[in-house]
Amino acid sequence: MARRGGRPAVDRSVPGLIVKIGDYPLHHGGVGAIRSLGRLGVPMYAITEDRFTPAAASRYLRGRFVWPTTGREEPAHLVDGLLRIGRRIGRPAVLIPTDEEAAVLIAEHAAALTGPFLLPRVAAGLPRRLASKEGLHELCAEHGVPSPAAVFPRSYADIEAYAGRARFPVVAKNREAFLRRRWPAVAGTTRIGGPAQLLDLARDWGPRPGVILQEYLPREEAEDWIVHAYFDADSAALALFTGVKVRSWPPHAGMTACAYVVDNPELAELSAQFAKRIGFSGTADLDWRFDRRDGRYKLLDFNPRMGAQFRLFESEAGVDVVRAQHLDLTGRAVPEGEQRAGHRFVVENIDLPALLAYRRSGGTTPHAPARAAGTELAWFAGDDPLPFFTMLARCAGPGVRHLAQLRRTGRRAGPDRAGGGAAQR
Image (tube, rainbow, N blue to C red):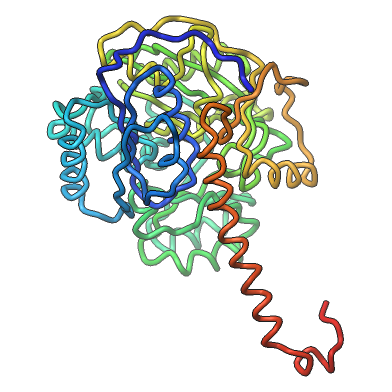
């Protein structure tokens, strides 16, 4: 397990509330935030899909609010729900969003939420623009930050024209944060191998495709980097960390499965300057890809909230981005400290399949240390084991049901359908 850093002096009278919109109960980032502040004595509350999520099982959780949401609700309904929760907590709490929808909602309704809650002062429309693939691409162009070449088709005809000139493979992503919940065009980041595949997929995207079609940066010519940071009201970085992603799930395009803390002053400066130029305040999770073909870091995502793997990063002063947010919003200084270079983060339930997939696909991560200086596990913690076992149970349930269904199907087939009792292969 990872060595613990210092213990910053937080205001224990101010609770934290984990805010999530959508149905994704197996979220290790929320568990990490509950543990991070809970270990310092901060009373922690969380919105959960049900009573049996891993977050609900944490010993550091003071109270849970079971509130299943989809992301398709009207904003007024979601704001009213947050205010009801605030009244039940009974004192101002720091809001900690774990997804883009929650971050956008909080920023755009800050006037109603300020008072019952403590939240960063950020321009109301900025998180939505950052969470939008098109909005982020425009901001990068405005401020001279490299990003992959991209198009934003408005019709099937636009896609047909693009298919005739594009260099494949390309990547398709959902364009807007909230629309991915209501009318998702693709399940996630999707690699498209050629024009025929693109046109076939596009037939299901409707008359106004909600996608971005982006240049594919081949893994053998690239390296994935992550930056996690907290910026104050003046967009100054009070905590900023850099690391390299080794594996993700799904492979090469999904959630971080394994990553290392690696010092990268150039990338840290690039990230800090971009946040300063756009006036961002709050916690951020940035995904960059270093393109060896032209020697530039290209910004893929700027998530205006904490990243699920934020516990990879903790300074020698004991500060991570969630602790930095709580300290800053409660009027306390954020102590400085170097990041713990060489430390590793592993998400147990997805890193094993990712490891097998990456061994088959090849590719290397040159900046990853040969040996970890310490390891932070996403789920298991000796002082808080129940979320790990709850995660296992929720992962095992669908698998057991799937195997049982296969067995029932085989029994119904019987010897006659199997060809006179011959073994099926």
